[in-house]
Length: 331
Image (cartoon, rainbow, N blue to C red; front, side, top):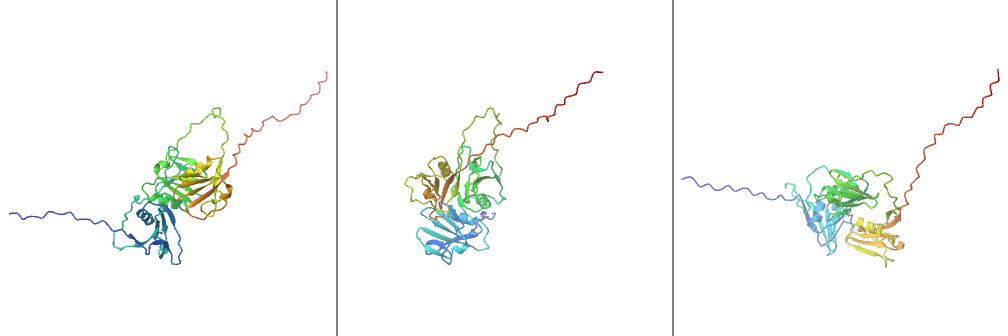
């Protein structure tokens, strides 16, 4: 009788333990350094603590996170800010710490990240804000970030598999992460830059038009916006006639002010996507200093000068003095 052979059982592979773990500080509260202060690296809008932790794992300088339940604000902090907490039941602080060094490297995050590649970004022209084929945009969830450089904004996009473009506003260091569909065209704006991740899209070209076919258009008034400093919400002492718009992004808020003859500036409350069109210039002279709020004063740009074409220099023949020949004397 042949011996009974036990069936071969495939080895079970345990999922690797993350090289970084988060430990909640006690008592419950907001992150603070040893002196009781804090130095936030970045403000993000996240729906869960796990997404906030994932964002921290994608930054080498992030040593901890602070999550506020009242508005889903995620703050990324350096390790020094996790020395203690400022007790607050609406706030949680988590310290990022290395786990056992022998464990294989992996990170489990709810946000799918790209394979390690060298990110390539191509700026869309003409310079402006990112727009899809319909002329609108759809900023990704958690895609509003305060960064200081375009490179930092691009790095944030490179770490998200759903990010196909970035929009960077130089006047306020505001970074927006967008899907690839939003890199179809731009809404011309000299304060805004749009970069597509990877290959630049083919921009629609306009067929040349004969000068005789172009109708004479009435001049369009153009605007620019100056941020009221320090960063914060606009003064509200004279806001009785202000117009509030819900569910808007920063670009839509600015566009609404552009289209309103009575709008003198706007306030954008980033933590809840609320736009306030300001109707009184007195409210655009100071702010309350709240860093998650932006206040801008509207300024009218001078109309472009359309110089008349310079006539070609005259090519008159040089004036030659007429000579009168003396009559030939008779022979």
